[in-house]
Length: 272
Length: 349
Image 1 (spheres, rainbow over the protein chains, first blue to last red):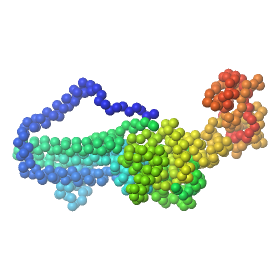
Image 2 (cartoon, one colour):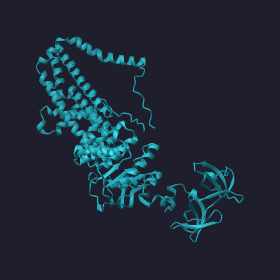
Image 3 (tube, each protein chain N blue to C red):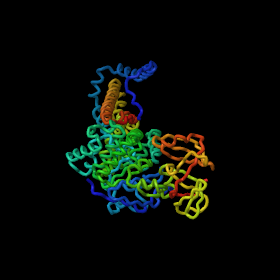
Image 4 (cartoon, each protein chain N blue to C red):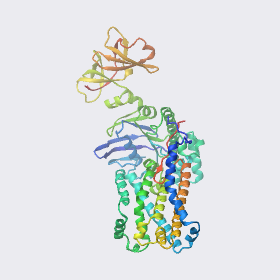
């Protein structure tokens, strides 16, 4: 008999948890409140009309889309292949994908410049390639967690034995069960691109974060308002993805969409 | 429903590094026959099944399905229904879509898929679960849906890879009967892999006992039990006593003076062990004793009495519970072997 499922009811929430929650909230919210005090409401109106706002934001959005697309196209098949055929390489993959976090951005940029197609040099899309490298640790971990939460080998073999080739298996079986993980990877990649400053400024490309900093020198309140706006919009996008993703995944018995992993639901089953 | 197909495994070998998972294995399965491969873990039975399914390739040898070598055919085109040990339903599809998946891959219309799924779910007794998702089903129900899904493509061969081992005892028993019943009704050629001898003996037409990548014996369950061909089969299937004895001129002498004909190839004359089933021995209280009752276990209709023979060997004897009354622990008894042919094996010290 399977373990008795515990009702997910609200348990008592001890006082010390409230204290920690409160401390964390104070830590995160006070700077935001300070920033808001500094800008005032009127600055938000000026943000939109300030020179360069639209173009830099649009550039960041395009970069986010391109980066996400390249990242998923590269990482999804690779990770699936490693899981199915080279399980021993998983350890290596874990170490390799963590490298972009420990290597300084300037080193990555120079490395990429050496091997990037010349046609891309000087265009903002060069930056997308750099972001792909930066996003790799997060994307890999999301996809890896998603694949771990399902019995990939059995599912693909079952699909094969029913007559589905590799493409059909990927499209109809693997990817639909990976949506939560893909959402996580997308969320992390988008958040990273929308907030990245160091590489963009080294690359002399005016992305939205670069624009905010540059603008700071002419009109501080507008620039701070723009940061708040970008923070809020990013947060909103993430919340929408997480909430919708979780709702969809729950309906089919999947896990909760979390930013760093996909939590498998407890496999409690009662025999009848 | 399905035209019957024969399956032949010819001299299959498969090595994983230094381990030989299959070592020249051959097996012929008649059309419509249910054959179980039984053996301890690591004996190669699952590898054999996976070679037939197309998930593994043999290093040498061939698999003939309906007389044709399927080695070049990929798994997706072999038309084999497979049920796995672990739950293999697609979590993103409801029960009906799971069952219809194989037909979808065969470009059948939605109406046809629905009809077929309904028919098969009816057959496995889950017609009312069509709209549910796998996570809403119990383990036993999931395996029944997996069976329906495997049968929906009208496979030439049904492959069962320990489909019951994740289930609890009661469900396992029910599903065992259901699988056998369906298999016979559809007359589908079936290869079933298990490490559970009770499962193999109760379900299969013939059971192949595997060890170290080879088949030790393939026989009907009753024959396998009554006349095991090798020492390994004898001890792996059912309970077996080893009675110390002396082999000479094709007969073995056990229990101080009982001589019966001996079977077993290549065993040298001299000290041997005679392999005897608990129910083949008789035991009675007697002044002319040759052992002492060490323990007794009530098993319902029979009682199993463990007797320590005077030489120090423990033997288990099964007898009707009604006649086991005065065989109390510590009683002096006489164990006898009514004269039948017994299998002998080299003496194990």
